[in-house]
Length: 130
Image 1 (cartoon, rainbow, N blue to C red):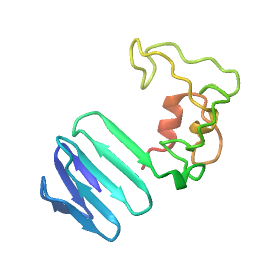
Image 2 (cartoon, rainbow, N blue to C red; image 1 turned 120 degrees about the horizontal axis):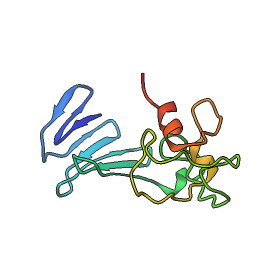
Image 3 (tube, one colour; image 1 turned 135 degrees about the vertical axis):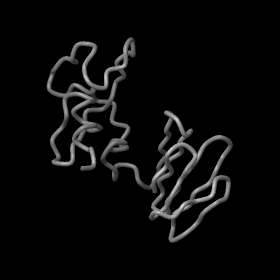
Image 4 (cartoon, helix red, strand yellow; image 1 turned 180 degrees about the vertical axis):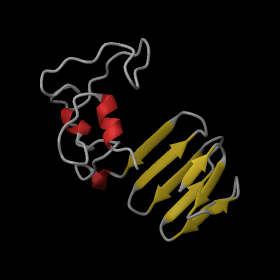
């Protein structure tokens, strides 16, 4: 699925705006100003066409996910700086000025190689598709 603005395509075939799409366990709907993609695997991604994205997963997937959305364990035992490291100073890659640091369980920053990233930017970069 590729979405750019309100243009959505599935396997390179355009999905007309406002028209629901369902094929082989993948559905595209248009709730209000948003585009939502749901899979039969229990994951739903909604996008406002600009910046906001929400990802939801069915409770059955708890503890069975990893990647950019974390591990879905609700493990509150730490923050995103697992080895006692301190956050990078403001102005680094991916830094949002004046944004507060949010507590994130350390297992939510698992990279594809299984190691834990120390910083959000390193975590995101590790999951970049070539």
